[in-house]
Image (cartoon, rainbow, N blue to C red; front, side, top):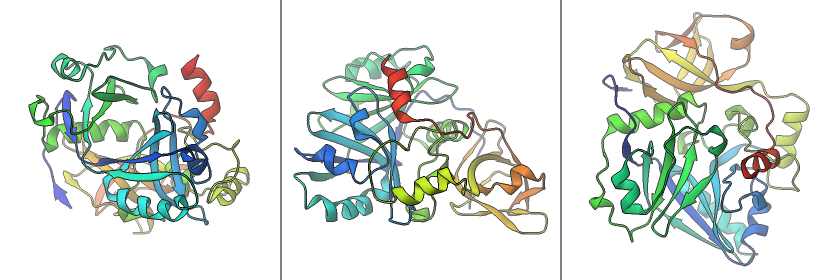
Amino acid sequence: MATVTSSNAALGSVRLTHLAALDVKGTDAEKFLQGQTSAQVSLADGHFAPLTCFCTPKGRMLANAQLLRIGDEHYRLLLSTTLLDSLATHLKKFAAFYKAELTTLPNLTFIGTDGNDQALNDQLGLNLPEKNFPEQIGTHTGSEQAFALRYPGETPRWLVCFDDAVHADELSVSDDDTHRNAWHLEDIRSGLAWLTEAQQDHFLPQMLNWEALGGISFKKGCYTGQEVVARAHFRGQVKKRLLPVSVETATLPQIGASLTTGEDKAVGEVVASAVNEQGGIELLAVMSTKVIEETVPLFLAGAPAALLPLPYTIERVDPEQLAVRLNG
């Protein structure tokens, strides 16, 4: 566990280090991805960037990601830095049978911004709306130097990505854990969790509420793990869910740390955490659904914990309908 200090930092613009990118190019790029991922790949049209995931044949997540269409026969996956190499290695075993080339991009620069940094916008040639338009979430825009992806959150925010052609050191952005914590806190309050290496091959996508975020197409053809994922959905077999939790402590837990009842029975495990404005901890944990049905005291390493409300309902959101709404 790591002890942290209270953070009242506004988002501003901050360099992010938890994300990386994997490019898929070639005449078979769409066909290849269609058989590997939960997204309807054709929905990635250069404007809408659907959430997606990659699974084992048993339906366990190897990675979750966001899928962007960068250009003709060119797609980009954004995912946890810790999963970049393992996902690339996994996918290359199947890409050998397609006209598709995979390239890891570990050196791309990612900036989280609230869009109000005019100097950043000018340097990258971006024109980001300052107002909070919820219908923009999941869309991306760009310039010759960079692209910007609209993220969820109470504060309007964008994930900006650019390559080495732009001199990142010349940009006036924060590069400290306090501002990165503010970005992660917005992810947590949005109910958005990124899988990391520590929990790879551990959860069904629904355990991260992925279908409620439009990250699973139940209308597409086969992809690895689809049968298990679909069966869990249609038979109501998902007994664990991603839930937000507050904890009365100033110590960030390790990923995978257990949430327990008063009888010391483990009922959940931490996926992500951040410090809130009061100096306490807010986190996302995959929890037994029984903790929703039965009001029981919760603890994290002895510290009292309490469930917080999700910002969305746990209901299936079809990405096909989401794309229509976003592009309408």
